[in-house]
Image 1 (cartoon, rainbow, N blue to C red):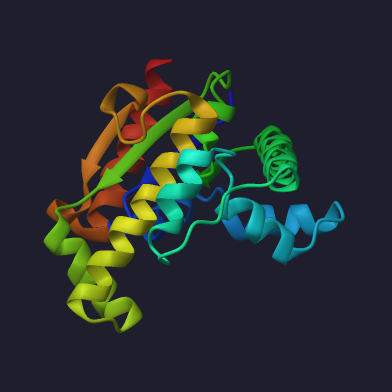
Image 2: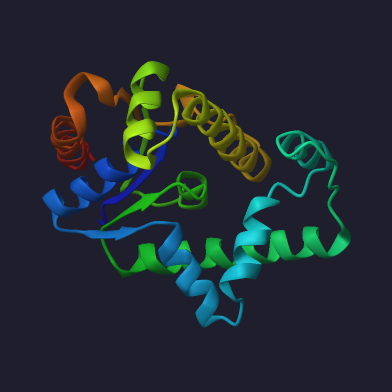
Length: 207
């Protein structure tokens, strides 16, 4: 039975780094947004189109209104935006399933926990951290002011939640949707990855 690990995470929680570390510790494949963009390009959808569709991926007028408020103007979705957003989501879902069929892997975001729900060896993880910890991490990593980091965190988390909620009909970050949720600030990147490794191995043993 394959070990398929999906990681959803709050922006600035270190979830991506933890996912990479976990894949290294377990010696398994690692897939994130960039991997799926490459897959889209191989299927004839260029990077710019993927990025634009991804921005509007919820195919929702209310989502468009919420996102446009950050730039101060209304930019409602058109029919072509909706078609392309759904096309890209279908494509990346197909690619996620294909990659999972190849063997053990860690998937970052992209609704992978819902897309791969039928996988018997699935482990669904959500990583979070206190807002002050996330602000500090984003400030240091992206060289931003405290105010800019706080705004970016709020915007990114809102986009991730809207994307996930729309395509899964579940609530992003709700503990009931995951096998384990963890505050990465308690043990740090390496410690959290080590704890999750043990969780994954113990879960496989129990199955």
